[in-house]
Image (cartoon, rainbow, N blue to C red; front, side, top):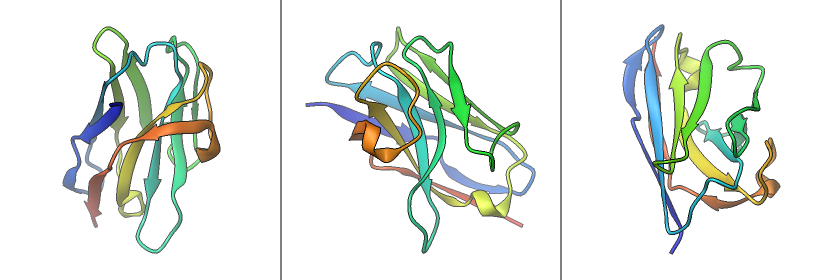
Length: 124
């Protein structure tokens, strides 16, 4: 059974940092692109960041560019999201996902496996 499990969420003050982790089990994710999405209260889930299977290519949503960094450790089947200079508008449930192919992907339709999400709350 393929599973993605996020961790690292929590409550921090604006300007602070968090590092989200995502552990994949059930298959090797080394051949697949990965991504982070988020859903804020009352809004639809939106793209945050994506990384290719090799880790050499990344893409970010404009709202997080320069503040968030996506990375992966293929040996450990891990995906990370380093979040700095956090803002109250970053408050959301954050989801990691595995893409159908090896490249980057910024749309939900390109992903076939999803985690359950981890809550990130930023206080002002």
